[in-house]
Structures are given as C-alpha cells and as structure tokens.
Length: 118
Image (cartoon, rainbow, N blue to C red):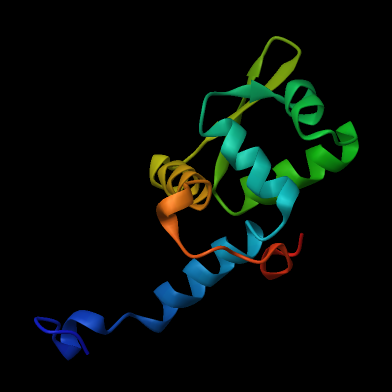
C-alpha cells in the first residue's frame, strides 16, 4: 500500500465493483465504445451513428438499446427521428479520458495491439 493510503480508503462496496465491471463489460464491445465516444461529443440520431461506426442500422440499434437499458445513454424523439445522448456525463468523460490517454505517446510503454484484441 502506498504512503498516505489507508486500508479504509481502498475498500469498495462489492455492489459498486459489480456495477462498474458491468459498465466496463458493456464498453468492451468496440461498437458500443465507439458509440459512447461519438455521443460524448454530442447527440446524434441512429442513422448518423450507424454511418459513423460503419455498422448496419439494426445492429447499431441493438447496441444502443443495450446502452440505454444500462442507463449509459438516453433517447428522445425529434419528429420521426430517435436522437441519442449520453445519460451520465461522467461516463462520457471517462471514455474520452481513456481513449485520449491511450492515444498519447507518453501515456505508457508501447502496447501490443494483441493486448487490445487488434
């Protein structure tokens, strides 16, 4: 344990850990991570999102439904369009931070593409 860290500071509620693991599990899908990345930069309709991720509309709709069910995104009607947006700005900030940190040369030693499934 590092200096200044107390055992009580490191204890987490098991339910919180389980919830966080669930969110990270959802974001383990490259398509869902990409969707959250895009929505972290502004709301979009499902057609624009499908174009941006290069996916079929029904598949992207299913990914969005999973994210919505988990409470990560929300949707609203705009005429005939369904517009999606981030439900929790903290999730958007976390995704932006992680993706940008991984893209920064000084962020870490050289990573193997295999480590990230690429």
